[in-house]
Image (cartoon, rainbow, N blue to C red; front, side, top):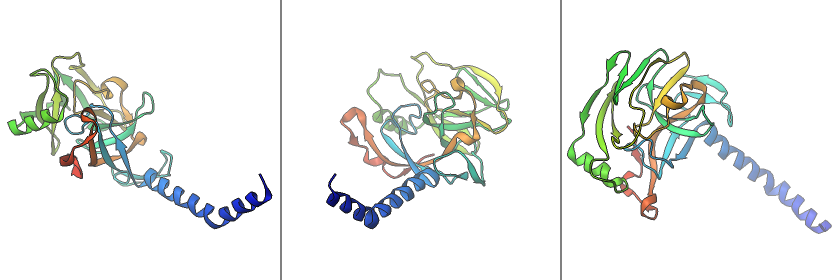
Length: 236
């Protein structure tokens, strides 16, 4: 490299280089500690979250962490039943999105798709036909009757769940007691979700934050066509 180019590089670094580095560090630290987004490549949270949704993650919902780590600087809340959270899987470290079903000390059981928490059966209701049609229209074509939708009443929150009777699944599980500082997480697509039934309880420190909204959505099955009705919609 010629002395002239070395001089130009040195001048650029002194003039703009540090500014660019600082800007990158600020942007990535913001994502790591305050707010983030997560692309959803699988259907484990259908019908609440679809493949192709990009969800907003509030990293300050429960605590403040050191950027790029799972170390806590401060903690002001804990995940509640019904919250949708992003976390690092205890199985392979991948980031996943699931719903909080059991908190520390809860007894969790599943009997033929019926969820029990602390010995009490969770209440389910059929969804209104217009909602069923709405959800079914957003999914890939499937044989009639493959998808069944229900409204699940979990704590003070109500959300839709889907079951798929025609596929093999773990429909009976437990009972198990959630240990201290751990959580039991499940997908809303109950018969097609790798969750705490398979990889066990999730430590509190592994939870990144709460998923609160869908920023945008692209339909992978239709040439990435935007699902405009899902843009900027809140998650329940």
